[in-house]
Amino acid sequence: MIAKLSKVEISVYLIVWVFSFSFSFYNVYLLGVPFEISKSNYFIEGWSILTRRKDDSDDEWVLWTNFSVMLAPWFIGHVILSEITRIFFIEAIPLCYMLITILVLLCHFPPVLSAFLIIQLCTFFIGMLIASKFFIWFLGIFYLLLISVGKDVFMDTSRMTDEDRLISVLLAWFLIRCLDFALSEVQGSNEQWPRFLNLLAYSFYLPCFFFGPFIPYDHFKLQVYKTQQPSYKTRCLYLFSSLVKYYLYYLLFEFLSHLLYCNAMHLVIENLMSNGMWTLSGIGLCMANFFYLKYIVVYGFSTSIAIYENFTTPDLPKCIYRIHLYSKMWRHFDRGFYLFIFRCIYSPVCGRKNASIIRKSFASFLCFLFVYIWHGGTIGIFYWSLFNFVGLLCEAICRQFWKREFVNRWLESNLSKQNLRRLEALIASPLWLFAVISNFMFFGGHKMGMLYFEKLFKGSLLLNVSVVLIAYCMCQVSIETDKFEKKTSDKYLITHKLEKVE
Image (cartoon, rainbow, N blue to C red):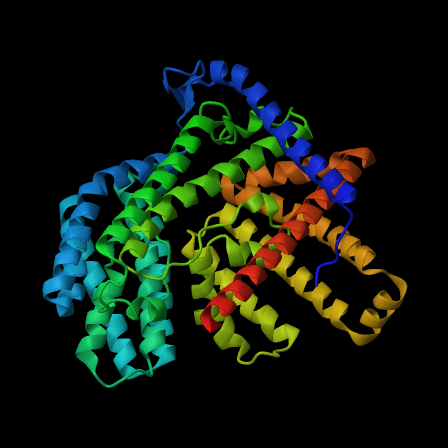
């Protein structure tokens, strides 16, 4: 039960939080004017109704959106053909899914890619037939290293083409789908052909094939052969409204690209060293905002089609400005990838619910080792993975210490529930700062993250106290948001149960 603080106190935290973030963004906006003049090669002419040019330096966003537009006719064909197949010959749905995606691959990529994916899929199916988790993970590690190390061996990573980048992304997603299938079905039924068809449908499902999100196999297989329950009209209305909603998010991303030039700024680290902490923090926070919007748009479009087809999809990312704990950041940003990591690595290594903190730490280490390699194995990803592991470890140690009986008894006898909440936010504040800077390394590279550490370590006592105070206010806002979400979800559950009883 989260303690309730006075409205005045919560309002103060909220005002400090909003002002700090807004003032940081304003500093980034002001810096954009001289930056645009000195580094004009990062900009293109944008919307004519705006006076400022557009920051076009986010290569990932440009690639993903352009390729998604190119795929639009294929998505339409996928939906139409799937509907027809489901009505007249539902058993052929897996072949339908595979046929469409293979055609996309053959039209836009070298044929050798399709051959490689089919070989990979068949080897995992053989691993599942052997019923050996060890062999399945041997295959998983082999393909993981082949994709990660092979990229450095066979590609010039400094001159990667758009095709190279797309292949790297789709191979990473394809691998974890094959792994999840094999580990889920390793002790399944003896009917092999239906399981092979399920693997085809799952691994080649077009809406989530290139950019995710990850849908757990156990959720996916339940809906493959089901007839559509809501009416066609209801599903079409949902699809239209959902696509419109995520298109508005796309427009928001494009609009902000005319105002906040953080994506271009972080590419010129030497130009940032002379800026103050407000501006540097604003650049990092703006990059976090663009990162969040990017995944909302990409995952939103994919899941809209999947939900239209009655598949259960993971929740979309939560706004990272109001998450103050490492564990919640992992749990609520990329929910699908978190479920894969938890189900396939963390939970099997822990073995039981009340595992020791040493065993949990080892499981976390293996998770982040996989995350590091899967994300590309760069130096920035290394620091990000390392700091995330250390942050989660610190959080787990604090939680274990907090649960000790003598600590619990002392805290409850000496502190009110409100002061316990304040203490929790105070302890979480440096961890939140640590998490923010590690995320800056993920968005902008390790040099950018190290610049923040340098500014803090060399900064005055007043600067560091101010930063921790702002972090404390942010943690309190996050706790209050969690409290509000729990309250509303409890109300929904109670109402839902009453409706079922009636």
